[in-house]
Image 1 (cartoon, each protein chain N blue to C red):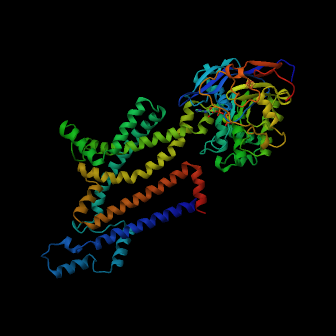
Image 2: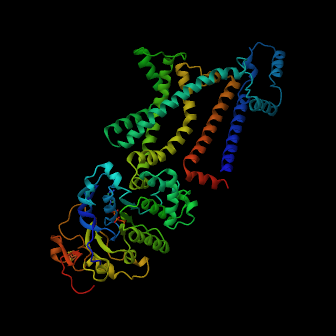
Image 3: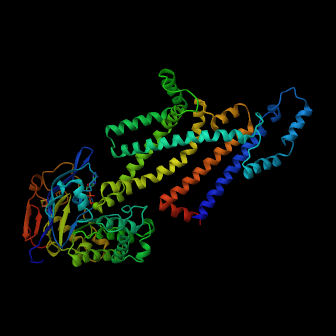
Length: 327
Length: 313
Ligand SMILES: Nc1ncnc2c1ncn2[C@@H]1O[C@H](COP(=O)(O)OP(=O)(O)OP(=O)(O)O)[C@@H](O)[C@H]1O
Ligand code: SF4
Ligand SMILES: [Mg+2]
């Protein structure tokens, strides 16, 4: 880990998001606090349904509108939860870019790829014509084959990987300081996945952008992330430098994940290998959210939610157990 | 693409051709002799034969059909009305502009009223204003058009005496007929606009549009409406034939001497050549608007444009 003083870019302060469901409120994200520094890639990892996308949508204020949000989202000094709608419009795309999970539904079927990218560029006062040229250049930057021609294609004429490149070009186009990538490679095959991850890495290295990389695939995390946050059932259960979390996981959940992970193949890196499913909470439970699946659960876990324990600077986990030995 | 439209066009032509055969044979399959419709029973057989010759009714049916269809195709000439013994075209040319005006006004007002209301409902979904509009339009759908005409006449002409019952010379004559047509058609369009817009709002690409920083207005116009309007435009275009057939009743109820009025009168009087002309014109319009709808949807939606291109190969 770098020893230089790191500048904070995004800080979530006890962020909670609840969705209205039959019978009450579903706690999708619960008191989640984390800090993202300038120029780093932070991977948010967790099983399907643990609330990763909800975090991403909360930061960009693109949640459906029926939800309840608590806590603060501080971005370069502004609390995004308190910004006016029109100020928030100026944050999106320009200061925070967001790459979505599904690249097919996420592009408008009636506009060409180039048009959808240049529409974003034109927001910064660039003329339509220049914007179109820049769109083609961006497509080339994200290694779109035949960029000139593809910029005139409609989304349904492009493959999944190409669509994701369009999406990425669109979100890079205004050079945001923070890129949120919500499972950018889930639907893609391994070679394209590697390319897309290297594009994200390049953003960090060439212009110091930060990336919040959301994934349920530990394999993706290994080569890319500087730091890792592990989510379980809406909570951040462990956080630390990538090596710390990988080599010395402290939380029982993370350990299980690591044990289930032969690090080579992509498929095996998926997090579906632990028994049981993530429970959904329609009320704030008293004890630990992981206890029904935890091999080390104790009586206290049922009544008292654990506090964070610190392993070393920046490496913390949330469990009643003291860390013992290696996983 | 071109092959696709050629295919659609020839299908349309085939349909019109079949309908033309149907309406043509209708005249000859009806019980009784067309001559009976022209002249009194007491007219002598010689005179009848002469008439039959004069109108070409003694020739084989095929020849008659070719003659009839050829005149329509080449000169737009629908022949002579058996009953009134006037050229059908004269009657049509007086009445078609009136019908066009009626249908045009109905379509225009339907558009101006329904689309904005549907949009309001979509954007204020589940608010009191949405509930009121949706419920009223639901009730309106259940009301038959002729009944609506009667109600309007009773309220505004008979009771309040604000508007005339019939006539077509002044602007105020048109208020009730247009209103009845619009009220009948508007609810479907409101609900279509509402559901299409709500559907478009929910799409992921709308979230993407916000995510890249587009202002709300630009998202609404450029992404939500742009996509919602595809189906609205096309369905409205394809609904025009319905509008025209609905106008038949409206014209009759309000005594507007348009084509619908002519059609009904001619049916009652068994004036076949006029009926044939009207039915053929309405069929052709139906086919034309359907093809127009097809072309429009291809223009508006590139996915369909591609499918049309591939489908034709
Ligand atoms: N609009 C909504 N209304 C109600 N519940 C929702 C809504 N959106 C998400 N949820 C629920 O909130 C929880 C978290 O969802 P979220 O999409 O954030 O998970 P995720 O970690 O991104 O999962 P995935 O890996 O499948 O994308 C899930 O249980 C989900 O069913
Ligand atoms: S607090 Fe208890 S149940 Fe929760 S992870 Fe730790 S040991 Fe397991
Ligand atoms: Mg998700």
